[in-house]
Amino acid sequence: MVEDGKSYSKHLVAFLVILGFLLLLVFFVGFLFWMFAAAYYAGAEKRKVLVSHTGNGLFEATCSDGVSRTAFLNILQRLTEKRAAEQYIQPVKLIEQTPEQVYKDLLEAYRLLYGTLASKRLERDVEKLEKMGLSREEAIKTLREKLKI
Image (cartoon, rainbow, N blue to C red; front, side, top):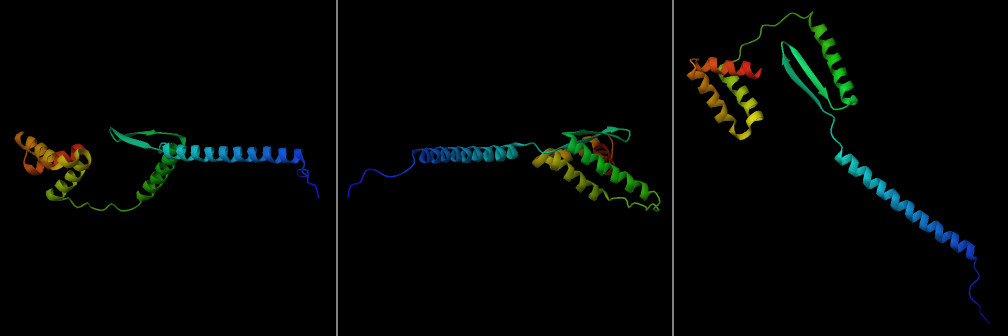
């Protein structure tokens, strides 16, 4: 028995090799696109809405994109509808907070603003108002009104 190489189709082998390289390339490109999508999602900015008080009961809203603007307007619309319904409810007399409660609220607001130095900063601001002739309670109420708490 004499053997002379293998019996195969050169065209079929070439086709399969080329197809294998193309599929490998497609897999690699697909993997790259997956990586780009993950990086894009991780680096994307969050939608933001900044609402600031401009005085006289007016507020200014700044939105980072159209979707956040639409969401903010929907929330605002629901709040105004709720507010319109609340006009028919009898008003309730509010209980005045004690100076200690107001001080705790101020301290919490100062913590958000000044961090670990909040208590020292609050005491300094209260003492500054006391030196101007206000009592401690009046100074605390003045600071509450200043921060709109």
